[in-house]
Image (tube, rainbow, N blue to C red; front, side):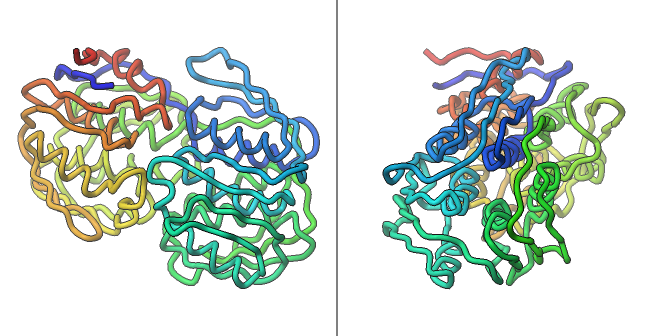
Length: 427
């Protein structure tokens, strides 16, 4: 689907989607509990659907019903994963979280599981798990590119050491599974743990579901064994990573009010507020978060703990004064696309001045963008970022492959129109 966007400043009030990151965690914890749980306020998306699909294959009963809000669902989860009669083949879609979270969960379910996926999922690294499995005598068979990957065996208590500079998702996967085995474990990062806030989110979710862990420091976690997940009623938060698009839109457009966000949160992408403020932007936080149009000043942005913000921060930097240097962002090359390369290529088509570096981007701000034809690279965050950039263009922007927002935010284009965006389908 190609969409034609006519430049117009967005303004209004929006209720942001639920945190997809928290949604994965809540649903998995509920599936690991005996009894029925209710998980509310989850925005439906392809990634969430992938996690639910696999949990069902592993034995959980999951029913979703509309929650009375646009694209919001309430999930009834009767947990208790168990070994199935035959080996499983499970499709993770393009969701890295689904794949990396559920590999250890599949092991403790007792199943032999073959994981498959689509898009670039097969190219995303899994080596930290292979190294763990080699030491724990977990059996696995993989293709040259990683998927399909068959895994079977069991996790044993002990010390688990793996690098923390590839993805925090490996830590979350093990933290979800290790409390259920017969003995205590220590999970250690052999490097500085990047995106540590995502692990903090996992620890907070585990605590809500009755699982005790001890964080000795970032990257070192003690996990007692023989624990039990508790069933109950759980609510997901609004998503700062999705709110970031609307907050940026308000800064380079007109006033936008974002509702549904919690001020006290483990979400690392809440950093969007402090980053915008440090660049000189006007953001007010009360019951909602409100932006006012501001001209930003370029600066150095360390993206180590908020990699998902890199695409929209590149847009902001492109229309700011001076130079912005985004650093420690090399890991975003391993997402749904190489996001550093994609943002440099597509924004430069629109008249930006973005220079690609091995671990980041160097952006010289310009007064305005000119418009033109761009491609979303099959990546939801690229598509949404380019849509926000269209506000600053002198001419129309055609976004090719705009349907990819379904991965995380199916209602993005309707929300864009709700804020005044002018959208037409090409042809």
